[in-house]
Amino acid sequence: MRIDAYEDPGTPDRRGGWRYLAWLVRRQWPRCLAGAVLASVWMVLLAATPYLMARAVDHGLEPGDMGALAVWTGAMVAVGGVNAWLGVLRHRTMTKVRMDANFRTVKVVVGHATRLGAALRGQVGAGEVVTIGVGDVQTISTSLTAVGPGVGAIVAYAAVGGLMLSVSTRLALVVLLGVPVLGLLLGPLMGRLQGREAEYRERQSVLTARIGDLAGGLRVLNGLGGKGLVADAFHRDSGRLREQGYRVGAVTSWIQALGVGLPMLFLALVTWLGARQAAQGHISVGELVSVYGYVVALGWPVAFLIEMGHQLSRGVVAARRVVAFLRLEPAPDEGTRDAPAEPSVLHDPASGVRITPGRLTALVTTQPSDATDILDRLARYTPSNATWGDIPLADIPLPQIRSRILIADPEADLFAGTLHDVIGVPETNLSGAGTLSAVIGDAETPLRGAGSVDLRLRRVGATSHNAPADAQPPTRADELAHLTQAIHAAAAEDIIRALPDGLNTPVAAQARDLSGGQRQRIRLARALLTDPEILLAAEPTSALDAHTEATVADRLKQARRGRTTVLAATSPLLLARADVVHHLVDGKVAATGTHRELLDAEPAYRALVARDDEGAEDTEDAEGAEEEEGAPAR
Image 1 (cartoon, rainbow, N blue to C red):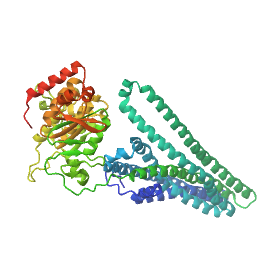
Image 2 (image 1 turned 90 degrees about the vertical axis):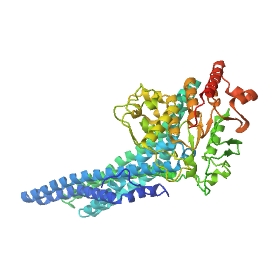
Image 3 (image 1 turned 30 degrees about the vertical axis):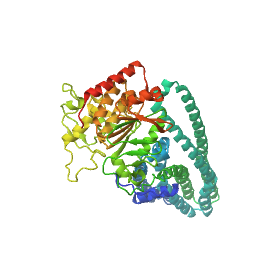
């Protein structure tokens, strides 16, 4: 049975950690059953070897019957060969069981994270998700070892007890009662391990989240002089995690030590009792040999039983964390009214912000969080009384809002892949030797790796909401034009020119091999490529130098002419190009007008956005250039 990493994982049982583990077993019960059968037969045949050896001694070696000795010896060789083959099959089967559990858990976690969407960050930290993906998934899959060797150990243990009955009732009772006694001794440690493991995982998720925050803001921290302070805090937190890891390790070491030591004492007791019975003549020499063999054979099932308890204790802790994540639910979508058929005013009563359709509107505030809160309310990422036209956003089905309103998050994820994948062109063939000069705006400069273009662009929300039903789908030329416009509007041509294979160049996760300004322009190009009816962007040029920022500001206004665009920014280069500027104080509109009107009439606004004389001159020059440009509407 092969493992399909892309099949439907099914609906997980979210009622608890044990139930989740049981669900993983049920989803692949034929494979789990095969693993249990193979492991059982394999371990029983390990115990069969001492039985055959005893027969070879009693019926062949002791009476001097070479024929019987050869038969029993041949049987031992045959059983050993078969058992070796069964061991290979058992290992392969259990590997598939673990891989299936691993992939299935990854799929349900990733699928649920996708369903949560924007609600994910508000309900669980990034460190928790990373810890689940990196540690808990592996722990869960490993715990399914109990399905194969665990079941096989129980069967083999019972089989050895039965074989011991043929030798000595006393020895059989010692064997059958020994493992339950071991369980009683190790049980409290298993419970303590679960508690320590749960606390360790919790601390680990918190520290993982902090590592991610540090990686993303290290340059800013260094520039502000806060690197040492944060490093000290991280050192303290990592020290606490280390101490908790020592506690987990202490419990684990006791379990493993007792798991090795107690079985040896138990098996030594069985051996000593067997030797005494042989010396007293109660059992034969062959039976004594078989007792020694049974003792050796018991080492495997006893070790597997202890390992099973250890892995299940850790696995159920990891499964509870996964179940807790799967229980998270996004806010219910109870919208029943259709969105406005035509472009309409967006209004946020909490702040007084009113967004006029078809205009470039800017939000200016000393607290960036106030502006981002407004954008979240206008896009219905947080509950509010915001309206679209005369309709409350809460009454509109969420898919309609998502298809027409887009937030360009400055920290939006950039997944690993080629640059055209990152921008949002997943089915593009840009191989070949040619040029795509339109993208870089320079007919003499080729765009490497962008020759034979086979573009099948899947643009989210790009189709107009009032397009006729019989409208023809965009051609490849149209789609290429959209890509060209998005890259040009984001002033990202130089990024493509600088990469070895242009748009076909692989980019690391979060585009960490690009600079902060390059990542910001790539995110902006991706947002513009979707061509939403309403674009909401928070500080889209904060990481750019003044020259590049002015270029992006000019091109952004031209690309979005006639479309509704809202920018949360304090840059004069952007504000000078806005049709309307809302100055916010404590999250509410204090003044509204153009950038120039507010500079003249509002001292607080002027103090917030004014730059040095050179910056002011740049702004005035940009305003004059804009007036002279007079670009036609798109």
